[in-house]
Length: 486
Image (cartoon, rainbow, N blue to C red; front, side, top):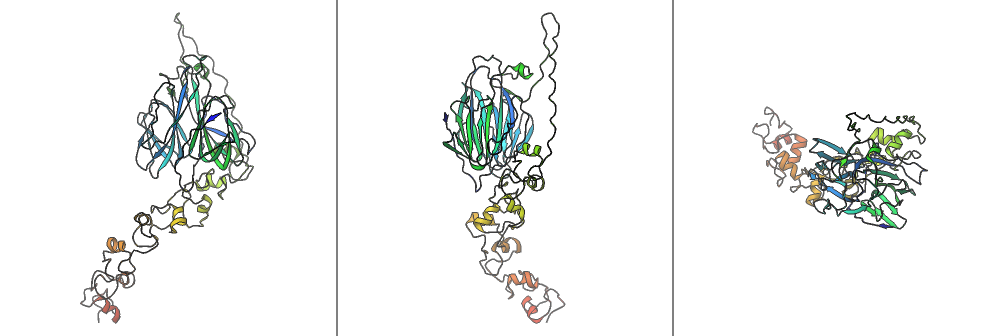
C-alpha cells in the first residue's frame, strides 16, 4: 500500500523536538478529532492555506533543511506554495516582500505563498526545519539536494477531472502527540495525505515499517488512508492533509489566486458582481455564526492546566506529566517555560526535571549551554565531567569548550612553570611569565604575590623603598608601604 521514501538526519544526544502546538483555525476542514487516550491522539492544524490546481494533479516535495548558526539560507523552494516547519531549534523566517520576520519555535509552522521571498536563519545553534512544497504536476522539482538540503522525496496527488478550472484545495499541516500504544488513521476524513513525518520517537506504518525521528514517507496513493502507531513514546508525528477539489464559492471567496498553483493566506470576501442591465447583484447573506463553545476549565489530572489548555498544547489531560520528565505539565508551562511534550526541552542531554531540580547545580532547562563555555550541559556532566556552571572548570584561563576543541584536558590546569597560575591567566590577565614561577625574581612566587602578599608579581620592590618584597615579607615589614622597611 505504501512506498516508503525516507531519510535520516544525524541526531544529537537526545532527539528532541519541542512542540509548541499553536492551534490555527483551518480555512476549510474539520477540527481536531478526539477519541480515547492511548488509541487515537488529537491532531492539531498548525498551518493552513489554499492552492488552486484546478482539475490537475499536484506534486508535493518534502526535504529537511539544516541551518547553520548565523548563516542565512534562501528558501530553496522559493516561488512554490507549501509550509516550513521548525523541528529542532528555533528559526527566524524573514520575508523580504512583506518586510517582516517570524520566529518559529520547534513544532510551529508557517504557510508559504508563492509570492513570498523568504530567508531562514538560526541565530545560536544549528537548527533543523522541514520545507514542504506543492507545484503543478508538470513543473520542475523545486528542491535540490545540497547546501543544507537533504535528499527530497516527492509524491503526486491525483487529478480530479470533474473539478472546474478554478477549483481550489485546502491544505493543512497537522501535528499529533502519541502516547505509548497510540494509533491513528490519517486520511479517514476524506482528505489526501501526501506526507507523514516523524519529528520525535518512532512510528510504525501499517504495522510493518518503522519510521524514526527525522524521516518522512509518502504513500503511493495519497488518496488512501494511512495507519500509523507508536513504536517508542512519546512521539510527535506530523502529516500534510489536502482536501478534495472545491468550488471557490463554497469558501466565500472570489478568485483564490492569480496563477495556477498560487496561494492566498486567508479567505477574501466575494465582490458584488454586475449583470448586463447595470444592476449590481447583492452578495448572499452571511451564514449564522457558530456559537462559541463554553470554556472547559476543569483539571482532571491536577497538573495546573485546564482541559482547554491541554487540548491546545496537545498534552495528556489524564496524565499530569505527559513527557515523564519529572515536572508536571503546569509547572513546565507556567513556571519554567519548558515544553511539556519534550523530555529535554533544550536538547542538552539533561532532562527538564533534573535541570529544574538543581541536582546538577544552577543550570537552565531552556538553555543548552548554561555557562556559555561552548559545551552543552549534558556533555559537561556526562562526557567531560566539567562544571556546567563554570566557564573554566580548572581555572587556567581557557574556556572548557576551547580546551576540548584544542585537545587539552579541561580538568587539568595548564601551568608550565608550576606556580599554580594557568598559562593563559599569566599571559592575558596578570601579564606574568608563564615559564617562570617568579617573574620579578624577588624570591616570592607569582601566585604568592597575587593571592597572599598582594604585591606586584612583575616588580621586585613593589613599594619602591629599596627593599625587595621577599625581604620585607620575611622581616615582617609592609612591602606595600615605602615608609615601612627593615
